[in-house]
Length: 375
Image 1 (cartoon, rainbow, N blue to C red):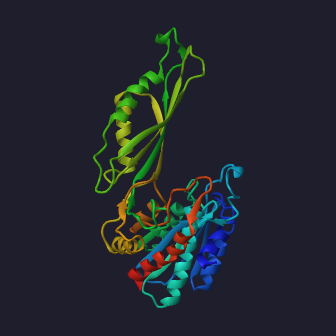
Image 2: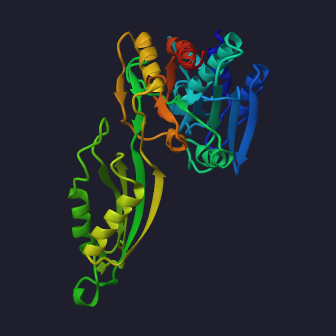
């Protein structure tokens, strides 16, 4: 059994359902400490974060990942126990195999090899992993980034191991992500009998024109490789359950995925202007999930493109699609960020898996990046 395969299996066997790390990071720290890395545990609340570094100078190249996983769902729906790694038909099955314990194991294997080959390498190589990526993402990388700001910790390049590939390892290079902004809005009316609308104020009727304007708005036409900003209403709730009662309150949940033409604060102001225009009596709670980020042409993007072309045989698609990742907290520190990982077809699903061949190729891929950037 290869080193990366064995380590991935050992990680899968630890049922680290977010935010529980279940001992994964202690095992990783032990491995990296033996390889000469300085390892620091940063625990906030129930969340574990591991910061491991080799070197003290710049430039600083960080591999970013997470040890937590989403719940497996009904265990009897799996062909094998989700926390007992099972290798069959050239695939490794288990919760976290693709998202993203395989990548974390590959980070460790690649880092061990790199410092053994280049003990006097220039710059610093590092790994940051959290147990709070699949959950609230409050006490994980977001919190660590605050610590780094206070310390003045420099990060030049960041490689996130999220499962980015579509059909074949290396076929896609993630060079940015959209921002995410969520809202919970309450529109207040006056409850009453449907036969006496003059004695009530229906918040549904009041809100619909404003919501229609919000949905119909074209926010922009995109930005470089980013798609246009989009807004989706995800839930509307009102009423007592009776068909003869005008409700006194309406609750609406919506989300914006936005490109670098906007900041979260600007979008909040635009939405509030629409609601005020329609004279709504409302309150709104905003949750800023993360600002957009984009890595322009430079050493990291060029190195990643070349390495993935070698792996896949053709130049990768360079994309800013998908949801978001913890790189949204590292990019504001001034880092250039890319995402490179295994095929994402089975993530968060029953029988999550990763190709054993892809898993064994990942350390070579990450090692090649380090050689290009720091050797």
